[in-house]
Length: 113
Length: 333
Image (cartoon, rainbow over all chains, first blue to last red):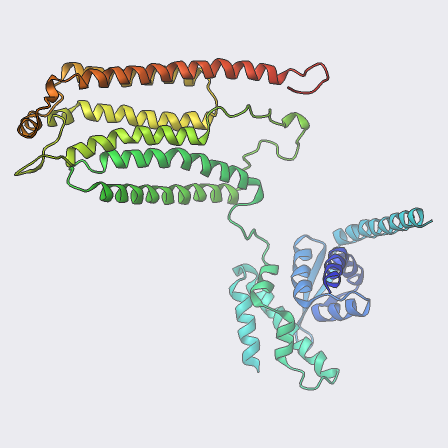
């Protein structure tokens, strides 16, 4: 019971930064808020709605995303898409992720053999 | 149903900065609609605006996510400075204020000691509240303007480590004791002015000559107050230093001079008191050596205080030199 809660806390900690990475990957194509939320969930990244929407705003403010209102349809929606600065960040984050994975694997191999 | 959405969006919008309010609420509204539609499409029975809003959670929390500015008054960089400043200002100002109020709060002399104490404590608390408020305001302004109190907080090196503080010579207990003893003087003076075993038509007959209040007693009280402030300074420094030593000698000399001059050149006893006393007892205060004893006692106390400080100063200096030199095994003494 208690260890479950403990584990949940650590898992959340571990996943926190990966939401940005996953969002940047998906936003190579334009998405509006809820569609992105669903796509993330489909891809295995369950994110709370009230975390994702403010996050998109922050990334836009940082210049990693750009956004546009699409009013062609009955329901006007704000579409987000990755910006050039976002592409650079994404590249570095991906490399960082790969290295983390390599390092964890290597340490596991060393300690379990 | 839509009423709920309106209320939710409004609750979020209230906490948003004006410039982003419209855009955020517009997006939020379509997002909520999307979420509701998705539930309906997945044939959730009773899929409901209510569920969607519950999923989005407390509007204040959501709005906080959209805001970027700091949500604190004083951040971690400033907090230590803030706490230190408050502590040192309060620890000096409050005792001094209490002393001032005790001495000057009852100039008219028609209130009881309890009333005097209460009003002095109340006044001191008020001053404390003001100090806390304005110190906080100053630090909030520093925080908001991004003023860095540390010169280069990011480039810390081990050289920045402060020296280990020398062991404290002057403890809080000593300081409080000294201040209490000092404050007994104004209390005693006020007491004898308002309370007396003898009374006439106008009230209590003071023991000391009322004319003394025109100059000598206020002067004495002034010296006592400076002494209280000095005690606070002494505590703040924590150990005897040369400036403190000099200050101690000067203040003791001043105290001794004021007491000596008052006793030597002024008429100390109130003639009315002496008359009233003569009616009740055989003891003649003006013929007794009380004043000489008081003066002698004052001399002893002042000289003792100066010598004591000197001894502590030289002993402290020796201890410090010894502590800074490692012994043969490389351990600090």
